[in-house]
Image (tube, rainbow, N blue to C red; front, side, top):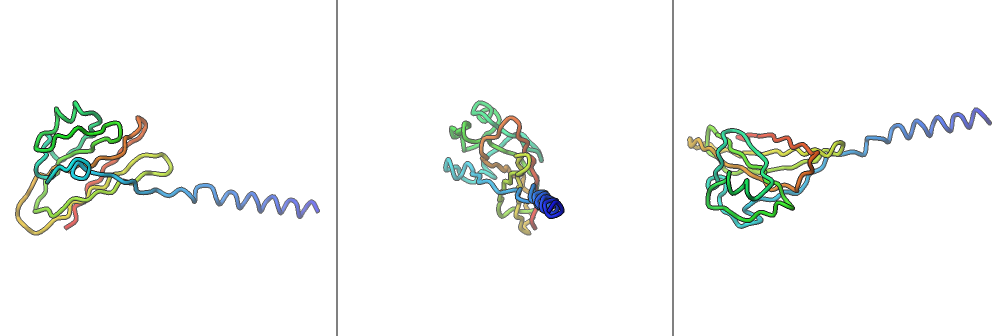
Length: 150
Protein backbone atom coordinates (compact mmCIF):
# COMPACT_ATOMS: atom_id res chain seq x y z
CA UNK A 1 0.00 0.00 0.00
CA UNK A 2 2.83 2.39 0.86
CA UNK A 3 4.45 1.70 -2.50
CA UNK A 4 1.21 2.50 -4.37
CA UNK A 5 0.81 5.76 -2.41
CA UNK A 6 4.43 6.73 -3.08
CA UNK A 7 4.04 6.05 -6.81
CA UNK A 8 0.79 8.04 -6.90
CA UNK A 9 2.41 11.08 -5.24
CA UNK A 10 5.43 10.84 -7.55
CA UNK A 11 3.15 10.74 -10.58
CA UNK A 12 1.09 13.74 -9.40
CA UNK A 13 4.27 15.72 -8.68
CA UNK A 14 5.71 14.90 -12.12
CA UNK A 15 2.51 15.98 -13.90
CA UNK A 16 2.36 19.29 -12.03
CA UNK A 17 5.98 20.05 -12.89
CA UNK A 18 5.19 19.72 -16.60
CA UNK A 19 2.29 22.20 -16.55
CA UNK A 20 3.93 25.32 -15.03
CA UNK A 21 5.10 27.65 -17.85
CA UNK A 22 3.69 25.87 -20.90
CA UNK A 23 0.56 28.03 -20.81
CA UNK A 24 2.43 31.35 -21.14
CA UNK A 25 2.17 32.58 -24.73
CA UNK A 26 3.07 36.07 -25.95
CA UNK A 27 0.12 37.78 -27.60
CA UNK A 28 -0.70 40.62 -29.98
CA UNK A 29 -2.24 43.81 -28.61
CA UNK A 30 -4.43 46.13 -30.66
CA UNK A 31 -2.91 49.47 -31.51
CA UNK A 32 -4.16 52.40 -33.51
CA UNK A 33 -2.87 55.48 -35.33
CA UNK A 34 -3.43 59.19 -35.72
CA UNK A 35 -5.16 58.41 -39.03
CA UNK A 36 -7.64 56.02 -37.42
CA UNK A 37 -8.36 57.95 -34.22
CA UNK A 38 -8.06 61.58 -35.35
CA UNK A 39 -8.57 61.49 -39.16
CA UNK A 40 -5.03 62.64 -39.97
CA UNK A 41 -3.83 61.97 -43.50
CA UNK A 42 -0.57 60.72 -45.00
CA UNK A 43 1.32 61.03 -41.71
CA UNK A 44 4.38 59.19 -43.01
CA UNK A 45 5.02 62.22 -45.23
CA UNK A 46 3.10 65.02 -43.49
CA UNK A 47 4.22 64.62 -39.86
CA UNK A 48 7.70 65.66 -38.89
CA UNK A 49 9.86 65.25 -35.83
CA UNK A 50 13.51 66.19 -35.43
CA UNK A 51 14.87 62.63 -35.40
CA UNK A 52 17.01 60.58 -37.75
CA UNK A 53 16.72 56.78 -37.69
CA UNK A 54 15.52 56.83 -34.11
CA UNK A 55 12.29 57.03 -32.15
CA UNK A 56 10.78 58.31 -28.92
CA UNK A 57 7.70 57.75 -26.80
CA UNK A 58 5.53 60.83 -26.24
CA UNK A 59 3.14 60.57 -23.31
CA UNK A 60 1.67 64.08 -22.98
CA UNK A 61 0.14 66.77 -25.18
CA UNK A 62 2.73 69.46 -24.37
CA UNK A 63 5.58 67.28 -25.65
CA UNK A 64 3.59 66.40 -28.75
CA UNK A 65 2.90 70.07 -29.51
CA UNK A 66 6.56 70.97 -28.97
CA UNK A 67 8.20 68.08 -30.83
CA UNK A 68 5.84 67.18 -33.69
CA UNK A 69 5.05 69.46 -36.61
CA UNK A 70 2.89 69.05 -39.68
CA UNK A 71 -0.75 69.11 -40.64
CA UNK A 72 -1.89 66.74 -37.88
CA UNK A 73 -2.22 68.48 -34.51
CA UNK A 74 -5.03 66.67 -32.65
CA UNK A 75 -5.72 66.66 -28.93
CA UNK A 76 -4.52 63.11 -28.21
CA UNK A 77 -6.04 61.18 -25.32
CA UNK A 78 -2.78 60.59 -23.42
CA UNK A 79 -4.73 59.05 -20.55
CA UNK A 80 -5.48 56.19 -22.93
CA UNK A 81 -2.45 56.16 -25.28
CA UNK A 82 1.29 56.65 -25.54
CA UNK A 83 2.59 57.76 -28.94
CA UNK A 84 5.58 55.95 -30.39
CA UNK A 85 7.03 58.11 -33.16
CA UNK A 86 10.22 57.96 -35.17
CA UNK A 87 11.95 58.62 -38.45
CA UNK A 88 13.46 56.11 -40.85
CA UNK A 89 15.72 56.92 -43.77
CA UNK A 90 15.11 54.46 -46.58
CA UNK A 91 17.18 53.56 -49.64
CA UNK A 92 14.22 53.17 -52.04
CA UNK A 93 10.52 53.91 -52.33
CA UNK A 94 7.90 52.92 -49.79
CA UNK A 95 4.45 51.44 -50.38
CA UNK A 96 3.23 51.22 -46.79
CA UNK A 97 4.07 50.87 -43.12
CA UNK A 98 2.45 48.26 -40.87
CA UNK A 99 2.74 47.64 -37.15
CA UNK A 100 2.47 44.70 -34.77
CA UNK A 101 2.51 45.11 -30.98
CA UNK A 102 3.30 42.03 -28.92
CA UNK A 103 3.06 41.70 -25.15
CA UNK A 104 5.43 39.33 -23.38
CA UNK A 105 3.36 37.02 -21.20
CA UNK A 106 6.16 36.53 -18.69
CA UNK A 107 7.17 40.11 -17.84
CA UNK A 108 4.50 42.29 -19.50
CA UNK A 109 7.01 44.17 -21.65
CA UNK A 110 6.05 45.26 -25.16
CA UNK A 111 7.69 44.65 -28.53
CA UNK A 112 6.66 46.87 -31.46
CA UNK A 113 7.50 45.60 -34.92
CA UNK A 114 7.46 48.30 -37.61
CA UNK A 115 7.31 46.87 -41.14
CA UNK A 116 8.34 49.11 -44.07
CA UNK A 117 7.04 47.57 -47.30
CA UNK A 118 9.32 48.87 -50.04
CA UNK A 119 9.07 49.16 -53.81
CA UNK A 120 11.61 49.52 -56.62
CA UNK A 121 11.37 53.27 -57.18
CA UNK A 122 14.59 55.21 -56.74
CA UNK A 123 13.07 57.74 -54.33
CA UNK A 124 14.91 57.53 -51.00
CA UNK A 125 12.47 58.97 -48.47
CA UNK A 126 12.88 59.82 -44.82
CA UNK A 127 9.54 58.76 -43.37
CA UNK A 128 7.83 59.40 -40.07
CA UNK A 129 6.26 56.34 -38.49
CA UNK A 130 4.03 56.25 -35.45
CA UNK A 131 1.68 54.10 -33.41
CA UNK A 132 -0.74 54.93 -30.65
CA UNK A 133 -0.26 52.13 -28.13
CA UNK A 134 -2.19 51.45 -24.94
CA UNK A 135 -0.87 53.56 -22.06
CA UNK A 136 2.23 51.87 -20.65
CA UNK A 137 2.91 51.40 -16.95
CA UNK A 138 6.06 52.91 -15.47
CA UNK A 139 7.58 49.43 -15.19
CA UNK A 140 6.95 48.36 -18.79
CA UNK A 141 9.74 48.34 -21.34
CA UNK A 142 9.10 48.87 -25.05
CA UNK A 143 11.46 47.36 -27.61
CA UNK A 144 11.11 48.55 -31.19
CA UNK A 145 12.19 46.48 -34.17
CA UNK A 146 12.39 47.97 -37.67
CA UNK A 147 11.83 45.45 -40.48
CA UNK A 148 12.42 46.36 -44.13
CA UNK A 149 10.40 44.21 -46.55
CA UNK A 150 11.59 44.48 -50.16
